Image 1 (cartoon, rainbow, N blue to C red):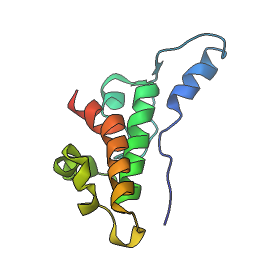
Image 2: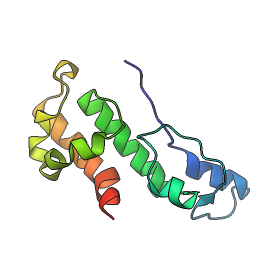
Image 3: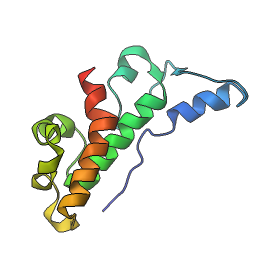
Length: 120
């Protein structure tokens, strides 16, 4: 019952750092803040956040909402079902009331935001 928009917004901090008038492709930092499971693995490796890493976190947030499970290891656990989004109803939380069409659409969003990025 607790919603998270975890880690989404790190790229916005890059815009603020640049004064808002310049286009910034990423934010580099020595200090990492984020919730385990929601943070794109590129952030701890490179110390860089971007709109793509924000999208990854949003994809994980949607997957948590779809499944009702915790974020840590969730993308790996659901990878097979996400490969075929029309089977996403099988990973949907029973008590969430997702229809098959809603589950499929959420799964497609997760694939575009998180799964494709994980594979790269």
